[in-house]
Image (cartoon, rainbow, N blue to C red; front, side, top):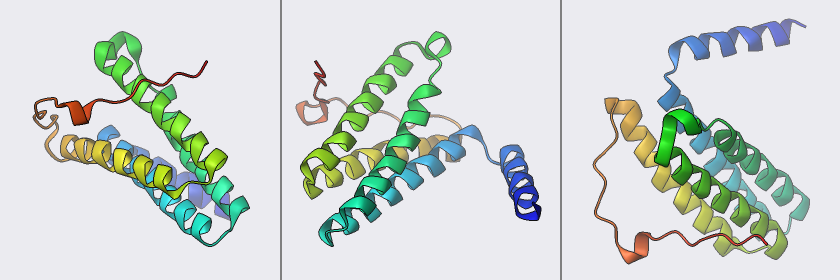
Length: 144
């Protein structure tokens, strides 16, 4: 019981002292960390551990997706929704194919977005966007 009270107190303190942008950065860090651990588990043949860790990363990204405010976020929220849907699909593919390359791809994409959120957390405003290139194009996810 005392452990739960300490945990609740720590959560309350964090909620009061961490900005929303910083909290998002921390969530991205958590997802990346779980996928890195999943990659190591995959390399060592620990399939159940890989599955559990990918599931944790999946839950983090799904939580971010569920918090999107489409009314206030407009086109940015729609783009983030598609981005998260793509990542969630690719995480499923990690487990289906047991493919470390997919794991590395998802980690790289999460790190890119994490860097943008970190810049927002530092300055309070988004970093300037680089001009789009063909390499920046996100593939469309076809689930059906």
